[in-house]
Amino acid sequence: MLKRASTLIVAAILLAAGPLLAQRGGMGIGGMMPPGMSGLWNPVVGSGALYEQTSKDGSKRLIMIAVVGKEESSDQTGYWLEFLAGEEGKLGVSQMLMVKSGGDITVAKMIIQQPGQPPMLISGAMMGMMAARGGAAPATPKADIHEGAEVVGTESVTTPAGTFQCEHLRTKDGSNVWISPKAGPWGLVKVASADSSMVATKIITDAKSHVVGTPVPIESMMGRGRGQE
View 1 (cartoon, rainbow, N blue to C red):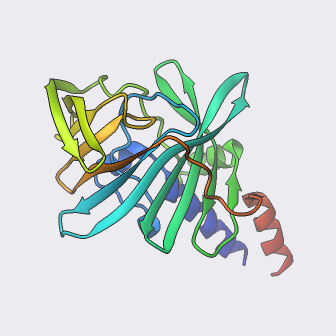
View 2: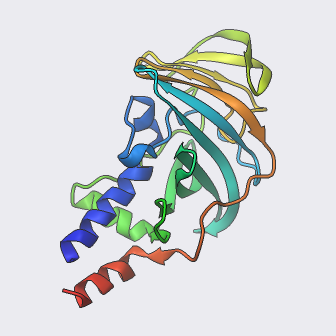
């Protein structure tokens, strides 16, 4: 059972690991990893956007990215960024407490809830331990996508969410990103990479958390697992 609990930790961290990894084509476990998570970080509680992602094989999935709360962390204000992804009726939820430090964003802790399962809380200490052991850990995305990206120009982009005046950027990996301050906490309107594309279908202004129940620290789950061996 302890081995199973340890596997859960790795799986949970991978679900929410590294927004920028997803931009390079990673899909995460259970299809919950959000794609193209670079942009202009502008967190406002309640703000968000719904996206449709299309893989190169033509398959589609829904993704919601939204700020659902804030919390003080190490004398700084952190914002709970929620990712809701998957097929309708089988949506997995992951949340990260994002804290801006200079030009970088750090993940102070995470909450993961897979369909039909209780929510798990993964502390910063646990993430650090996993990283030290060579395991997966959330990347630290830049708060501003302009760092390391080429500005292509300004373009009008129309999606199901409306028409936006966007700045068009091209990242080092060749992905194209269109951003607007009117499109949620990252400003993403459209993303196109070699592996997938994503467009905003709805802008959200009253986002609420989709986590159901009280998150249980993963360490407690491990303790219960040892007791049941």
